[in-house]
Each structure stands twice: as structure tokens, then as C-alpha cells.
Image (tube, rainbow, N blue to C red; front, side, top):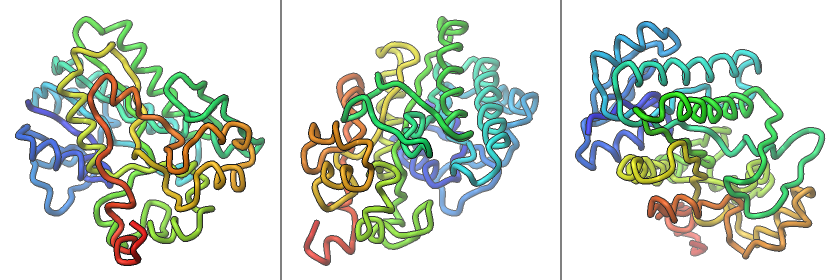
Length: 301
């Protein structure tokens, strides 16, 4: 399959394009920069330029598009700029995919749409959180992801006869090199997140190996025509990024979760990926217990 991956040079994108290429697909990465060592063709382009995006997609003629390009860090820019950029990118890519007659489009959202961490306080309706849980964005980044999910739903209503759409909410992405000690997106290491649970509590201890995200994309592309058009999926590791029982850590560090936390087993994830397993046959294969070198050497993995 000929696949375009936007944002393919990023922390998540590098693993996604590698997994797809290793599976035998013809992959083209489109990003504002190129990454060393990627086994795919890389193009530099500004996907906010809708006309240029349509022209580029028309030239590439992808059978499928995976849209990862975005401002990926909340508060890294003013909220209005994050919202305008992320929604503008998604709309441009959608229109480019349609013009090129791509058969499927997978869009990246985020667990932040659920609204945890809100300054006014937050409590989940239930745990673990699944795709039916209400969304409650409280910043420009999360709001942009809700808008992208709505864009997908709109496209299903408008273009569903000619395009298969999907949305996935990848948990806190950990790239392969970060297991070896490279800084994570927030600047500290995975080992530091485990040593100080407060660092990971802000994300409700969710995480995902970037290679497992690539496996999810592969699974969705294989079954996009079989699952309900526009389906949304949480995509996360099968456990939580914390050494103590997750219910205890949540109750201590995220007080609004205390009433619901008791429904979780000691190492359960707070976000459920059961839908991905049920509909796509996907389940994360990696965890901090298997991947973190420091954990293995200390005998805690």
C-alpha cells in the first residue's frame, strides 16, 4: 500500500513510518523537517498551505494517509495559535486526501480531550476511561483535538462513501531512545517519571511505546474497511507508568479520581484500549517493565 504519513519526522512519526515500511508498505513522510535514518522517502512541506497540500497529494496519489503532524505539546505556544494550527493542518490534509482519492485517513487525537488536569478540578465519570467517556477540553491543545475528532465525524457524514476515516488517541508517547535515557517530551527521563510519580500523575500514568503505536496504525489500515467508519480508539500500554498500585497513586496524587480508582487493578491502565483489541486485534506488546534498561538492571522489571 502507498501511504503518506504527515509528521513522519517526529517522535511518534519516526516509529510509525518505520513499522509501516518494515511491513512492506511504500511510505512517504511529509514534515517540516527530515529525520536521519528513516527508511522512507521524506518530503518537506507546509501542510497549512491547503492548495500546495492538494497538489502534493495529487502527485503522490496515496492509497492511505496517516495524519500525525501537529503542535504536539500543550502550552508550547499560545492557545489560539495551537488551535488554529492543529485544526488547519487536519482540514488541509483531509481535503488533500479526498482530492487524491485516498481510500482511508487516520487522524491522531489525544487522551487530553477527557479534561484531566483542569485548574477548576476534574473527576472521571468512571475508570478505566474508554471512548464513551465524555470529553471536557480545557486548553487550546485539547480543544483542537476535539475539533479534529468532530472533523472526522463530519467527513464520515459528508464523504463516507468514498473515504474510510479513523481517529486514535495515543497515550503519552515514549520513543525507543527514551527507554535508554534520552529525555521524554517533558524533559525528564522515563526513570525519573517512575522515581517521582508526580511527574506521570499529570497524565494519569498513561503511556505508549511509539513502536506499538506503529503496530496500531498497521492494524487499523488492515481493517479500516471492516470497522465502523469514523471509529475512535484509545491506544495505550497495557499497564500504568507507576511502580505502586495505580489506584493508590491516583487517590494520593489526583484526588478527583479517588472514588473511581478502586475499580482498577494494581497495574491496570487508566485508559482502556479494549476497543482496539476487540475490533482490530491490537494490544500493546511493550511496557516499562520490558523496555526500561534501568528497570531491568535494578531487577524491578
